[in-house]
Image 1 (cartoon, rainbow, N blue to C red):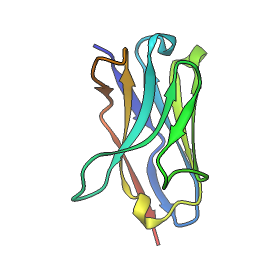
Image 2 (cartoon, rainbow, N blue to C red):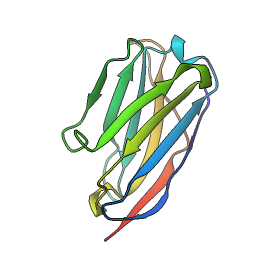
Image 3 (cartoon, rainbow, N blue to C red):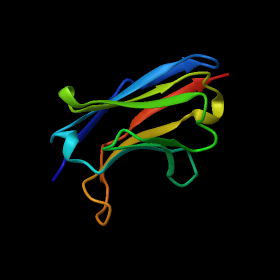
Image 4 (spheres, rainbow, N blue to C red):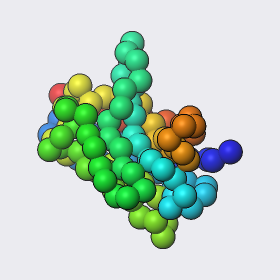
Length: 117
């Protein structure tokens, strides 16, 4: 079982920035993919961004140009830098780790991000 712990959430004004961190209990170099998801009130969980073991990144349309996913292998940590936040970004953000492409995600407990307008 892989354990993931998110941090860095909180309350921010519209237009502001936050950086989320996710510490993973096992070497992230072993992971096929790391990702950030989010779930807004009354909505389904949705993908935000992914980063593969190769370092290749991908973003959902709403995140492109505003969010940046990165990793620090030495710290077993994946980050999500979020800029130009707006009220629609208010959600619980989850870190996810996928060991192999045929498996299922391990999840963090989630962290609240609230953007005030």
